[in-house]
Image 1 (cartoon, rainbow, N blue to C red):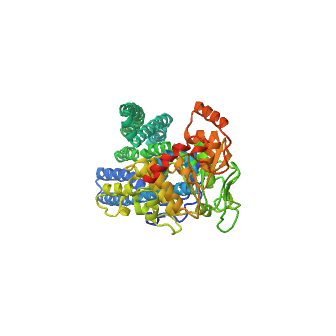
Image 2: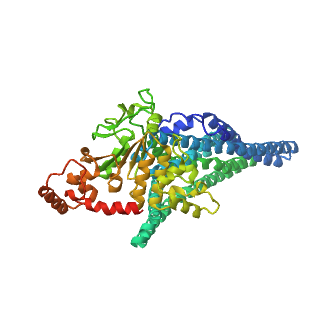
Length: 619
């Protein structure tokens, strides 16, 4: 696989049982690239290490005053130099190709896993960890994969040099053969400590980055409450911890680097002293001494790759472990589905709570527990975080449908929707039925002021649809982001739309208009809204009240608020004392009629709805 051929048609099925197994799997799937890098590496390192023998032959030829041998040695040195240049060029090319293709393969696997898991991914793994794995960790893993071939070539070259010196000059070759393994392996005992310090540094840096991200995201709120100095002090302390950890890590790696200079120097001194002694005794020639000396000096170059592979593995092992953890996650249901059927239609029914949303109706669900409401929304869309009873759409379990078909049938917008960076046109370019125009969806979601803000923020865009949206819509307010997300969901126009608190960040005037627009645009479609807003509840065809995870009451909003104290407490945020007072009034009042109660029926807070209606009409 070459870089120009990326992405892979099929990145394969990774071995995600552990970090080392994932690294082995990546290397095994790049066997061709590893072999090419190994061959070019052998050519490069062998040519580098052959130079000392050429130098020794040249020195001996000069001592013997042999012009023929000197010319021959010059030709050999020219040949070695050419081989060094060619080998180094193509080794670098092959190594970088291995790095990039390994990183690309891993990124494809992570992207495929994210699409496969959907919203379940961030419930099982932090979103920040997923980003870290797909960026920094991928680079570290690619570094190790490409370093393997260069290390293998360097190791084979060192062995070949030791064997050649033993044959060429046994007396000095023994010293080199014993000393080189000691030099290569001396730093291994220090690597675990250096790795642990590097892990601490990465952990502290991650915390500081997370704190900085949270501070930037909540800067508007922090300014409102005067908490800027508090968070600044926290980040200052976190950054100092990162600095101290980085210094401690750098000290250990500097010791390792110093040993890589000191130990080969000591070996070189031993070789020179022994060589001079042998030369005085007449057991070796000057050319042989120069050859062995030069070989020991040159062999330090491939020896550096021993430390590099140790560092690469130390950094890539925890990265591979994190990547393997993400890649090992599985869906609770089969993506292919176990039932082949046409697009289901009908009532949406949740066996776990007893909730039934009639087809082509506007159903509002009130739940006092926000976490329970979030789990219910996920379950209604077929994103159940744990195995259990599947939600039924027209009597067909969503878990048994192919994933694409289930997503087409039911769309869930959670309470914190994400806006991707790009133009507004690109944001609204989603798989859709084609029945709802973008202009109608934006109008129903009351996005007129949002369009103005986008145009003002994009100097080169006269058409609001071409205005740029920043990453996660950070330049917009929470209410503006919420309304754009709602417009995107309305454009999709699914058969069933589930909205979790779609208007929690907008004012009551805007909320009333959104409720009217939502009801009008979703006419003839099934809509389920999880909310406690009276304005949305009053426009629903049916309100379902959940208490302790089960359906406790069903009816219209005005009816439930007058007859069910628990429902009234959730919707109006009554205190316990207010609940007791309301219960006493309900006991003293005559039973309510079956007709829709009015302000004079004794139902609390109904009179308060009249001003709201007047406000909505005036708005």
